[in-house]
Image (tube, rainbow, N blue to C red; front, top):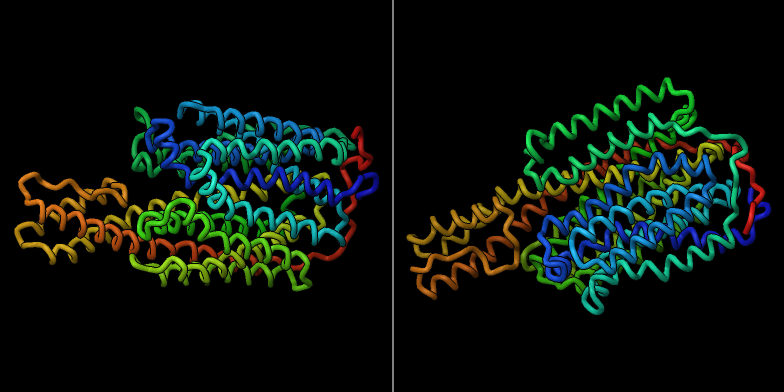
Amino acid sequence: MSGGVRGPWVALAALCACFFMVMLDSTIVTVAIPAMLEGLDATLNQVIWVNSVYLLANTVPLLLTGRLGDRFGPKRVLVVGLVLFLGASLWCGLSTSAGSLIAARAVQGLGAAAMTPQTLSFITGLFPPERRGAPIAVWGAVAGVATITGPVVGGLLVQHVGWQWIFLLNLPIGAVGLVLGLVLLPDWRPAGRVRLDVTGALLASAGLGLLVFGLQNGQHYHWGQIVGPIGVLPVIGIGLLLLGGFTIYQRRARDPLLPRGLFANPVFSYANLTHAALGFATTGMFLPLVIYVQSVLGLDPVASSLLCAPMAVAAGGAAWVAGRSRVEGRTMIMTGLGGLAAGTIVLALLAEPDTDPLLLVPGLVVAGTGIGLVFSPLTASATFGMPTHLVGAASGVFNTSRQVGGVLGSATTGLLLQVGLGFAVPEAAREYAKFLPPRYADEFVERITSAAQTASQFGGEGPEVPSDWSPTVAEKVRELATDAFHLGFTNAAKATLVLPVVVLVLGMVCAAGIRPRPTGNANNSGLSREPVGP
């Protein structure tokens, strides 16, 4: 399958550069939120949309872009996506308003959606099945490390050179990837004409778009009205109906967006469910963890980012080991999911308002090792033996499952965290109210409870204190309010981390269905493997 390809490992470097940027940009914005608020004079909702619109634009088209690679050839779609991504990155870095940045991030997400499925398609074409373990290990290491490295790199750039550089950094990386891709990647042409399922693409895109939008932004709209009579829950419901219609239509379509042979082997289905669980859990654990270390433990962006550095190193090392190991893939996947669950449990048990941040490192390393052990064997299990003419569609589905799982994890964890704050913060306030004179206690609890219900910022000056309170009492109230917020958030975050653990257990159940595939002829190609052009 690699005949005619000059230096498949060097070509893999170009693919990894593209994939690294895509994964990095899905998490790098988190630590830049305070700097963007100040630099763009933006509202919190606008800055949240900077990340949400990227995830939305990156998730919705994946099924279609995977099939576009089958139709026009993976190199062409990847190059178009990379050029679009780089142009949008420059636009992001030069933006001077929140609106401009949001629009640029949407275009950037579309470019990422075009690139992502093609990277995995190329790996299956550049390397025969018996030599695919190591390159998939590298691909998995890039996915794991980039996801965790995003906040680390973002923190360093924001603190030392400015938030704009979290986007401008893509330009040199992407330029190298573009040159390597144009020179080294073969221009595989479809052996037969692959028709695009336009109706299916519209149903899938609209359904996924409405579902992801509703889940991603439901908390912002308090799960009520978005505009006029249109509410969050109806939007989610319509999205589910459209996806149901898409599923029914695919059974009748002449050239379906999801080819019928794609799910012929249940291993692919189990792998996608496991991938969704992994996306859910990683997003679900990071949300409360990042807020905890910054707002409760008081770490600045760089310090909080460096705290996660051992996790990134562990994920990269584990991914490389997993890709080269002779241990059965299913065993490695279940071990990795168990390790991520164990690390999350350790973090939840150690988290207290006065915890030394260094005590969290062992739990982070265990979690990172778990993440690294999963990516490579899971990807290999999903793609092994897949006919080449189905690889683009398979890659689109496989990446969509992770993205949708991540959106579900973000939305659900955020909702549970808010609900938990509604209970935990007032309870903590009642405990700390005992240190105040009785005549101040009730109003103290009332103000803290009100602040929790309106999602007040942590680490600020605390609730507003009536002007007729003495300076001594006011200072004591602010001190106790901060302590109450910290204790309440910590308790809510600890409870929230239970959900990712439960989902990981479900993921392990799904992974148990991933059985070794019999070795067969994986070379039945739908593409001509003779490179055309450079």
